[in-house]
Length: 457
Ligand SMILES: [Ca+2]
Ligand SMILES: [Ca+2]
Ligand SMILES: [Ca+2]
Image (tube, rainbow, N blue to C red; front, side, top):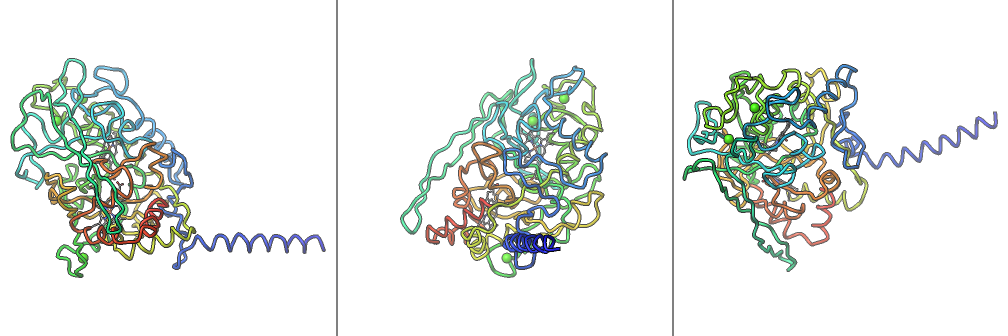
């Protein structure tokens, strides 16, 4: 009797302690701030943080996820081959994982097996669906590698010059301004060439982004800046080759793709040269490099579906240090200087999927999935459906504090030009100019708190 009472007292005490500890993880509206992906959150802070499936998958779904995982890591080779056949004739890399390192960001180099930067191409004008016009002889993407006996379309050269930025308080930072040149083209490139260098973004959490109701994304838009905060934000609408319709764009750095199935299918085709049932024609069809093997589609339909399911069901890593006073203060500053005007901290997902962990989740993606004019400094000058040459999709910030672990050396922004979070912020212009200026006018201790907050995401 006595023993039970003591036990009760002790367990009550322990419970009270843990409750009180836990309470500090909870926001004012009662949600656990660590759960960046809601139920689709995983607690891992290692280099493998982005590689885990969401919980609650059925046994069959787990198997499909694992099959997709294996294919994501497979190195493809030139046809004919018994497995993983069909690479090229021209391509950018040999596997998904060699660009999306540890399912995270890439490295801003081109032409090597660890390179994750590809260059989209175009010429002025629009196709029948409002899309970008391909370059005769090169298409809409520059493939800088080729299988034996074929020529890469060209070599991509990247160089940087440093520019010093001085804060009002006298301290300074250095930004590297990239310059891209294209040498050894297999045939001359046109004079009116438009280019868009893009580095691989992370691939986790994309199933949740796909499950945000369209009405929610549209509700964030303020095309004519009715509320006068300098931020407009507009949706991209893009052609879906599977449905033949124009749909809300969510994926790609200019929200230039509407579904993960198409994103993955065009990655296989354009990045690796592997034709499939969604994108069946070799990227170099009609060019002198075409293989004319008549072996299409090169990828089994099942593999394409597995890999799509794999990225759809990759969990989001939990936030860290959410109770740290500096992190909390940084979160307040993030709202005060209106970073949250584009990087939306909290969104509710929809309800209509068969994967329960992706349904009805309160997520913290820190994106509105909209396009924003980011100023001349970040402009590429190449439109992509409704996106202009100055517009980019708000980069999701979840997991950003782990890039150092998942990638070794982290790189930020669409082409990896920024080496630190501070540099990434200093590149913000256009609609984000006000926020950038307010950041620069903060005392250094507050700037560091804001960065510490970003590191906790
Ligand atoms: Ca091929
Ligand atoms: Ca091409
Ligand atoms: Ca506005």
